Amino acid sequence: MNETAESKPANQTVSPARVHLTRRRLLTAGAGLAGLAASATAVYAGAIEPQGLLVTRYGLAPRAWPKGQKLTITVIADLHAGGPDMQLPHVRQVVDRANALHSDLIVLLGDFVAWYKFPFARVPDPLWAAELKRLAAPLGTWAILGNHDWWHDLKGVRQALAGVDIPVLENDAMLLGDKGRKFWLAGIGDQLAYPLGHGRFLGADDLPGTMHKITSDEPVVLLVHEPDIFPHVADRVALTLAGHTHGGQVRVPLIWPFFVPSKFGARYAYGHVIERDRHLVVSGGLGTSVIPARLGVPPEIVHITLG
Image (cartoon, rainbow, N blue to C red; front, side, top):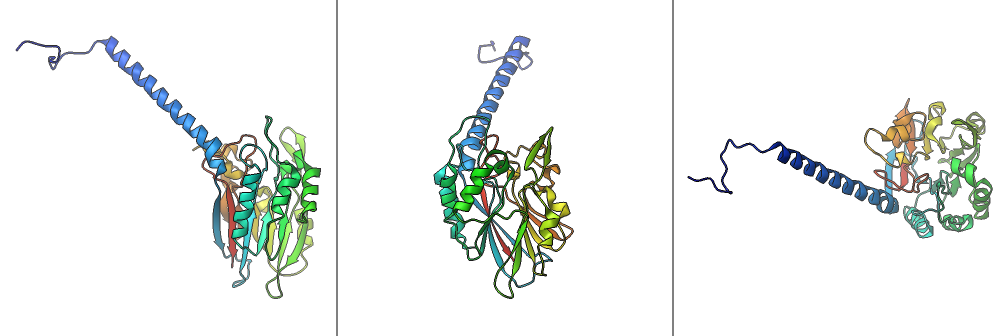
């Protein structure tokens, strides 16, 4: 049979030039697909995930919390009002969702303001504070301050919270609840309040002094901004609540633990941690900082049921 253009002998080889061309096309196509995937991921991380809002629920029974004493807590951390992903409508959505949980207590874990290395649309302090004023819980709404509040807008944040009657617990403790169901709510100052340069900070926190103000045997819930203080928390504290890490904010496999803003890496990056029968919950927070993007850590409100 005569050979035609459509029929080649089985043992015919393809020229090296054709092999090179085929590989180059494959590499080009692969690079194009990788670039497309990277672009899609960037769009999702910058424009889609930061606009979401989840409620993450924990049911806890710490050893230091009385059995049968039920308490529900709504946790709002790292609001970072401003920037492309936390303008006033989104702040309003956070407040509406938090109120819908009907918790006994609402706590705000600091970093109320956003900060980036580029110009961005700010939300004036009185406006985001006016939204937080709508938060309602039988045992009240209580706050602590975060490092960005200290670094970028300390006077403004203090005035805004005072203006809407949200008390700030700064190395202080309050006894809350009805008779027979009382507990201490304690909060410490920020651990990174004063930058000293070269990655060193002087904190405004006084954990021993705060614990000294707890003068009876009722259980304790402790509010901290950075979770790194957890190894020093006393065993009698039933639950420590923290924010700051944003859960890593952009969780790229194998790499993200090195970018968690904690000297412990991923140890206290996110979620429920138990050490020596002491409980810690680290919220992934709501807003963003440094870069306006989230990936793998959607914005969340935390809802906790104790007992």
